[in-house]
Length: 511
Image (tube, rainbow, N blue to C red; front, side):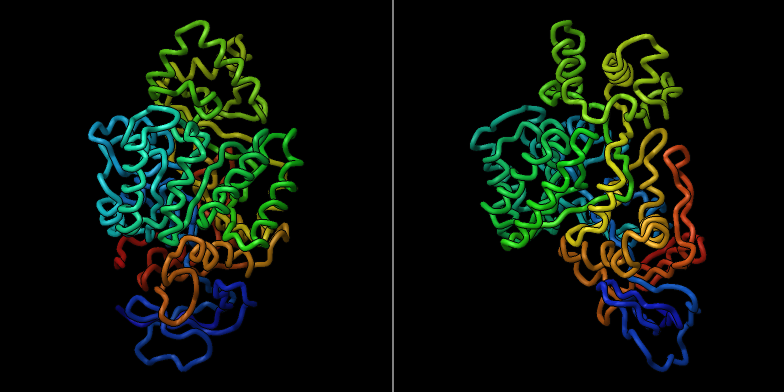
């Protein structure tokens, strides 16, 4: 590999320290020097005057478990050189003999078509290590563990099944998984009792890895959900990462301050606790999350059967309406499996109901039936004041939570990190540049024990992003999400250029 010097830039080293003027020398895939030094005569020099030089960004909450294997480039264009997949209880392993079970469970977020699935963490990670885009870390998904052992069975499991899950989680962590995730608003994980989670979190604590959780609720149940997770951390000693913390729906916005105080107090007690958030008021997930998750026992086929039963349909409708936190005017359809309903993409549930002349909840049921469950939504959940509070909080990391869809994805897939550095930090002033960079480099690297990434420091992997602090931003919007960011000039991973002046490269050295 050639020796490269990033010369004359503003060095933002990832630690949160003030920027400094200086150079960065990389060679053979690692960082050799940072600061003031004589440039080697054989070095390639990249002029960084007027630009910022930072560590490669780390997306510590991603759902691109399959796309990282396809070397998709949307993340590279944002400056991302490493990401953590396997979030919210969804991982592509361990796969059961009947892979359709895990496909039906996870394809709503994985956007998968092929016969994917790996028997072990080692098998998946070995393939992910060949990615030519980002360095991949993976959490073991609780939902995937359950599916692999008992399929779509809900509720308390037999002792032998819990023993199997403990053992498989332990083996996965031994094989290199960086932690464990739960998705407690998704069936079957939503049905898991506290005792089951406690047993699995003790395994995580034993290995000193991270427990990341999509909690049981973010609206009406936000306070209770945070209390449960803090109790798990207290009882097991695991490192707790609360995923995409927010308060959903106007009636719950005042609860965010309450749970932040609880998290702060827990950290002051000595619990290793933090959270993450994305810089958008809207979230996105599968449409079936709006339903009571007991209705998905037996998977999507079980749900479809219940929707044909008049009494069951009424019961599901009543519970869905009662638990709706953001309102039908704030939920938009973002993707569908077939072309039949494509005209609904970008429309709210309320608007579709008006055009069809039916109740909004019936639109949800009809779309689920017509699309065999493969429907994604975008939800306007948060207040801007609450978003500012979480983004600027010292315990937060910033994430994309991005995933691909057959339709219109959330703009976070294309713009999270440039938006953070541009509109959020430079224009709104919610964060300093150094704090923003810290929240997407060294901080997530520490939370997820990602070695030798997240800092510009000798001995670290040569993951480097050069960006223009005066222009960096994202034009991606909810209406037009697939727009390339501005101001990302160079991206190197392991010392190899994967983006230069907006042109994405095609080769990378593995590590």
